[in-house]
Amino acid sequence: MYMTPSSRSVVVLEKLTKSFNGKIAVYQNSYEIEEGTIFGLLGPNGAGKTTTIRLLTGVLKPSEGDAEIYGYRLSRNVNVIRSIVGVLPENRALYDRLTAQENLEFYGKLYGLKDSELYERIRNLLAFLDLHDVKDTFVGKFSMGMRQKVALARALIHQPKLLLLDEPTSNLDPVMSSKLKDYIKELSGKLGTTILISSHHLAEIENICSKIAIINNGHVISVGGINELKRKIWGYREFEIKLLEFKPDFKKIIESISGVADIMYSDNKIFYKCVDAEKVNPPLIKALVQADAKILSLKETERTLEDLYMKLIRGE
Amino acid sequence: MRFEISIIVARKEIKEIVLRSKLILSMVFILPVVFGVIMPCVLAWITLPMIAAPVTGYSIPPLTDNWFLIPPGGQFYIFFINLYAGLLNLIQPLMIPVYIAADSFAGEKERRTLEPVLATPITDFELLFGKALTSLIPALTVSIFSISLSVISVNVISFQVFGFILYPVAPILMLYVLGIPLMSLLTVFVMVLVSSKVNRVREASQVGGVVITPLIILFFTQIFGVVELSLLTVTVYILVLIFAVVGLMFASLKVFNRQKLIEMI
Image (cartoon, rainbow over all chains, first blue to last red; front, side, top):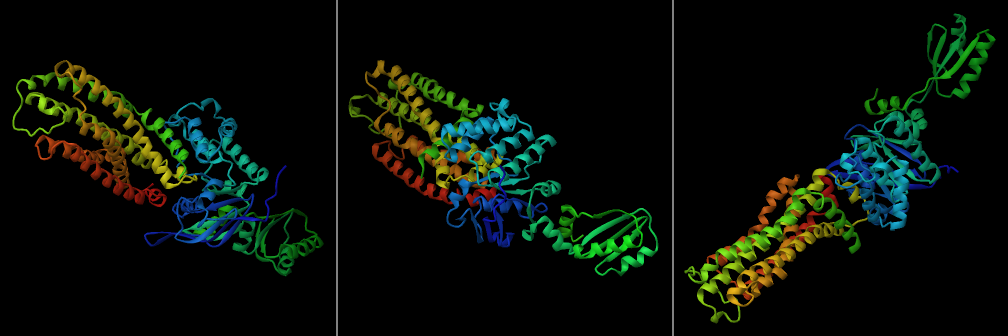
């Protein structure tokens, strides 16, 4: 049974700031992440994504501000936070001279898991990630993709409530990447794990994240649901009407409808923008039908997350 | 402080660094044989003629209760064997931790494996203590093994001449019991400080060679008769070591914290 994300905010960032040598590396505006959400952190290289993850794992101490994770304050209960957060760092950071099984055993024990529980989890994770046959092979002999899987298993070994994934699907083949995305959705949906993903793969983020934060030069420039952000950024929606045959009379009809803007014509297609589509589209269609237009389709031109990202980061 | 967490770290590191590194593993097996058997035996054999024709010009401290009964050549032999066999056995607790600690501290920086460990609920002190144990356990094990071998081999050779156990004398025994753990700890803390400045295992182990200095000082002060090898001088030496270890421990704790470590990665 799938859980719908609750409205309970389990990660609350309160102007979390990190400076190095007086220079601000990260300034997170105050925002919240709801339980069970898959939250995307987007930004170019050096934007501050890794620093943000390090702050949330308690590896780095904030210079200013604070965060609350599942009711625990970063400033006061950092060790409790470390026990409920799992992290997949960008460089994977595995011990090459240990086997996959030994890597997982070490971390499981550091998280205080009892032997019986630990070995069962290791077995399940290795089976899920198709690593069971190579569990006794040194990690140093693994391909990048296999290393990625071991690092992911390590992040999940203590069943964290908050999972922080830095580029989780890089180095994975398409099949494994898709399997992982399904698993991430399952973790969030079935177990209610809150997941924060930092990624450059915009399509991937769009596919699985319900909310995102776009970060640039250490500052969060926008936070919210993807559609909500698109509306906020562009302020209008774009539509395309395809006709069987275009007649010059239609121009006058379309231009007479209030709320329609930036109209363009191409062959049998009409392109326009409007803010409130629910109020604009019905009278427009009605007027065209009355003018004997044969409408083949009406569709909204989708803005992708990439469009949104480019707009916010580069102003394109 | 959870001791079991430090043990988990030490067990992992001994497996990873000691048992799976050819250099360190060979060192652990070869050093006791070389420093505990071969070199003491060679020394004991080739210096036996000293009993008949002692080297003069050295101040030889009374090292045993019945010193006055031993002829001067015998005195010099006892002094010589204790000093050199002692030096050989004291090098190991300094040398072994240099290589292990370099791999443990600088190696973790070089391989960038520290971040997920720092993201677990381990405290900085538990991690430092675990890493210190990683160096201490092999160093002490090898030292005990090597000392036992050297005591047996030297005394087997010399007993037929002297009729009593002449090595180790009390000051050397005191150095073994108290000095070895202290010198190993000193090496670990020096390596923490060295590793905070360098990023490569090789650089760290090269710079870490500086830890042998206190032993060299002790050795040359004996050779040149500056200080007598007695319980008093060893006590002073041990006290100096204790102060150095405590001071270096505080300095290491200052350097070895999450903030600084992660910023180095």
